[in-house]
Length: 431
Ligand SMILES: [Zn+2]
Image (tube, rainbow, N blue to C red; front, side):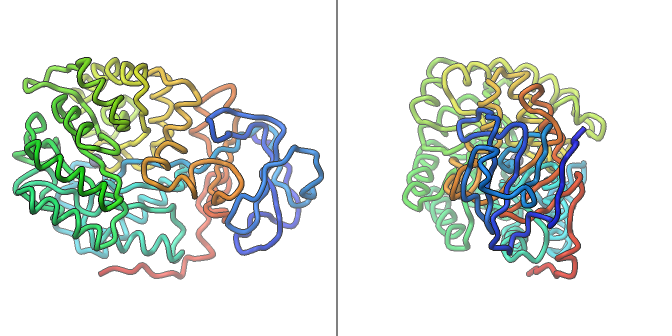
C-alpha cells in the first residue's frame, strides 16, 4: 500500500517559510465528511489554505502526494493518564517513583500515542508537579511530543478515588478553593471524582463522594474560572447530577444504580441533552482487543462494557455528543488507542462515520476550548495532521494505519516511526 510519490526537496520543515502541500485521496473536512481532489497548503506551523488539486498553487516538488491515503486532523485523546503504566502496578508507580522517573514515563507514553496519530493528549489525572513538567517539555519543544493538556490531580475526598495523587478536598469550601488553586497553578481544566472508582482500594464506584450542593458549587466555580470541568461518574445519579452541575464532559458515565445494575432513565437522558454535557464512555476499557495484556478483573469489565453499549447508543440517538477518550494508562488500557475508541463508537455504538471521526478530533477540541487551534483541517489551524496509509472512505479501520504525523507543521512520524533525531539531545525538566 501507499504508493507515495515523493519529491525533492523534502517537505514539512516546520521552520520553513515556504509553502508546501499534502495531497491525498481523501481529506477529512471540519464536519467529519471526506472530500476528494483537495490539496492542503501549509506554511510553517499553520494550515494556510485548502485548494483544488491541479490548481498549480503549490509546485509538484513541494507536494507530498499520497494517492491511496487519507489526510485527517491529528487525533485528540480526551482521556489519558500519561504517568500510568497500563499494568497492575499503576498505583505503586505513581506513589513510589521519583518525579523525574514519572516525567520520563509520561513522555514515553505521549510518544507512543503520537506514533498512533495522537497529536493532542488530555491528561485526566496525575501528580500536578509531574504533569506540569511534562506539558512544559512538550511546549518547549525539548522533546518530540504531542500537545499536552493537564488537570493535575483530580479533586477527590480524603481516602477517595485517586487520593494518592494528592488532590484532596472534603468540604464545599475546600473543593472550591482547590479548583482555584489548580487554576492558579496553571491547569487546563478541572477533573473531579464525583463517585468512587475501580483502581483505588476502599473506594466505592457506586457511591457519591460529594453531596449535590458541593457539586453545584464546583460547577459554578469552574464556569466562573473559565475552566472545562471533567466529572468522573460511575452511577446514573452521578451522571444526572454532573449534567445539572454544568459538567463539560462526563467521564465513564456508567449509569449504574446502587446495586450495580445499569439504568438510563428518561430524566437522566433529558438532563444530558438539556445541559449540553458531552460524554466520554471510555469505551476502550474492557475492550476485547486489550485483553492480551489485561490483568485480572478484565472479564468482568468486558461484560460490563458490553452491557453499557446500548445505553451509549441511546445517548447518541438523543443527540448527546460522545467523545473517544480511552482512559489510557489504567490497567489493561494501553496508550495510543484513540483510533480503537473511534472505531468502536462507529461499529459498536452506532455513531455515523463522521460523528466517529469527530469524536477523536473536532469535538474534544471544542470541549477543551482549543478548537480555534487544533482538531480540524481548515485555514488558520495548526498543521497537526495525520496521513493514513489507506482509504478511510472504504474502511474506518484505516485510522489504525498512520504513516506520517505532523505536529504544528513538523513531521514527527514517518513510515509509522517516530522521528526524534533533531531533538534527541534535549533534556527533560523535572521538579
Ligand atoms: Zn481516568
